[in-house]
Amino acid sequence: MSERTATVTRETSETTIECTLAIDGSGDADVETGIGFFDHMLTALAKHGLFDLAVDCDGDLEIDDHHTVEDVAIVVGTALDETLGDRTGIVRYADRRVPLDEAVAGAVVDVSGRPRFYFDGEFSQDAIGDFTSDMARHFGESLAMNAGLTLHLEVDGENAHHEVEALFKALARTLDDATRIDDRREGTPSTKGAL
Image (cartoon, rainbow, N blue to C red; front, top):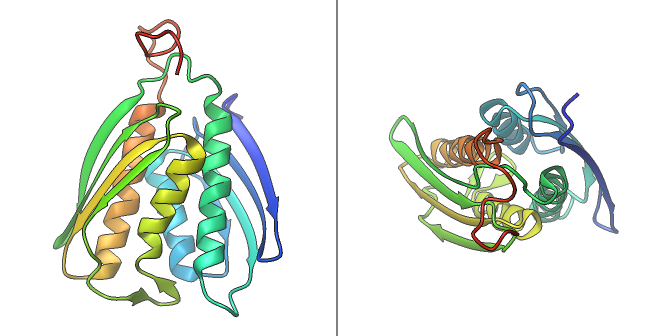
């Protein structure tokens, strides 16, 4: 198993979640959130980011999908932050654009330890199955805030399924690139000597 692995749990009155993340993985996913499309997106995140990701979430889906998606993002973000430690040797910056049919999405990240989030775009339909389309934006925001990322996401298209899936794939590829160890680098990737 990857040395850069973390297991994080979260229990509130709204959700109970256990997550294990290995960022030097092979893309294996074991995900159960109760929201089929969200499971599909988390599986895509693992597959295209080459992360091994296990998420088990019992959320208050009788209300809606908000708490489940937000809290899973918090837990995955926290796990990502823990796996990176002091971020010694990582590439740090990355950007990718990913198409899916008519849709295209982009992600730019600085794994800086300083959380910021920016989003540009709209989703063409309000929901995809039981998943509220705007929760893709909120997932990115909650992930960035808890993983210590400066993250810019953008999306354009005509079909919300394609838009959200392209967004998760762009995020996956960007995180894979930015969190890799650069064998040429010693210490943290900053002129300050720390992130």
